[in-house]
Image 1 (cartoon, rainbow, N blue to C red):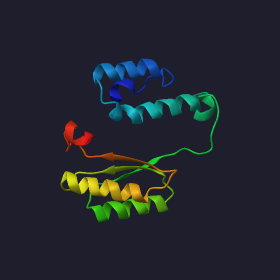
Image 2 (tube, rainbow, N blue to C red; image 1 turned 180 degrees about the vertical axis):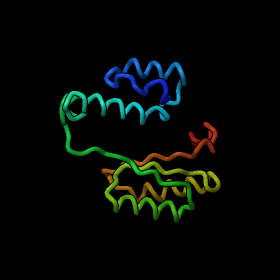
Image 3 (spheres, rainbow, N blue to C red; image 1 turned 135 degrees about the horizontal axis):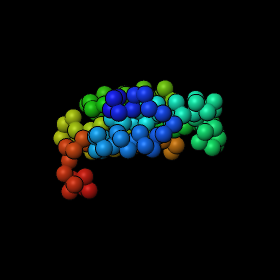
Image 4 (cartoon, rainbow, N blue to C red; image 1 turned 45 degrees about the horizontal axis):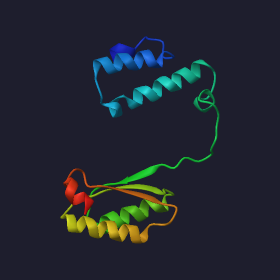
Length: 135
């Protein structure tokens, strides 16, 4: 990617993104850092904050989520509580440390602890079939 964009005008974000896409189709996550850097450089070249370049601030908070790695139910609940204590209110909990029954028990325990303002996503890391996920 670097040879494609190094030395190019960073304000030409769409054209540079097309070059990146032609060299590496898909893999949006891999291109995210470059995309953010291009937007930052574009704003700096205009002498503005990125927020102002995109139309101005509309909020003073941004909900971000914490990823709770795969672990036992006890570890997952402890990490969930740890991130909550750090101020997070959005969580993605990785599952599949044991059986599906273990995962379901973890989900039930975490949901019983979750607060109304919190959002929790569960990710079994492709360990479940679609039929199992529906149950």
